[in-house]
Length: 387
Image (cartoon, rainbow, N blue to C red; front, side, top):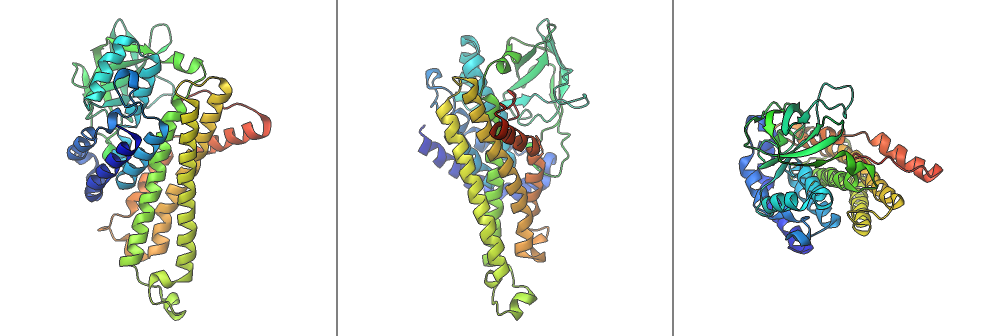
């Protein structure tokens, strides 16, 4: 599959997903979106970043970002399901041994998805892990397990007896694995990122995850690039619905009629706000594309800490700005389209709810902080997975 073929497949998938996005949002965890996920898994897109040496297309960040943006504009919840999958594919390329790569890449090339079980609740901070891998057995409870419910495999972070973090891969249907649908949030509802419980699960496939961040790396940047693509996709989806509503449904306000407007699009204030919004969405798309090109240049293994920092900061800018514009686009929709657009039958509030829910995965203020610290004082950003 080439870049153009991947983009075409993403557009085809987006067209298939768009008609059901409202219903999936409304039903949330009450109904697993299996039909939509089957379309995703069967699209061929899950394998686009598998290295050529392992039988895949070996496509890079620019392709991945564009694919994610296109799908997210149609349904950001379905777009988010494979976010960790692509991270796992990247990690395997650098840190997976030959047997691990052969085993899991064969699954990915066959359209079998890897879900995630990295985050936990209840600790003092996000990295306060209670899940343990000891004597070949995995025990613990995870949350925010996007994709795990319907995946073939799950990547699970766990502490070893030596105090290192392992990334273990277990089959979704393995004994001792239970994934719940206790996902009750205001946005990104169809991701069903609830609780996963692991009880004495046997583990054969794993590697040292702590070591990933002991050297210059781009895994955080590449993972965040896809998150940025989701935000920018949400912004584009909201803008598209705003345009459609203004052209087909919106009436001019009384003030606009008094000023001579015959349609909502004749209102000079609507024109100004819409023009401002569309410019900012395009700017977010440009930042995303620039960040992706930067990661293309640097490669999966950065040649130096300086290059790793360059990639991380480029993505930080795209993610921070994209998050703000997605939230803005979801809110501006109603200012532009008027009270009638808030009717529940349109479900247009899903854009803001999805953007707001997804945008707080990690704070944008710290991204701006690291950008400024580097620019003003040559302080390199931290080498972790959230930048």
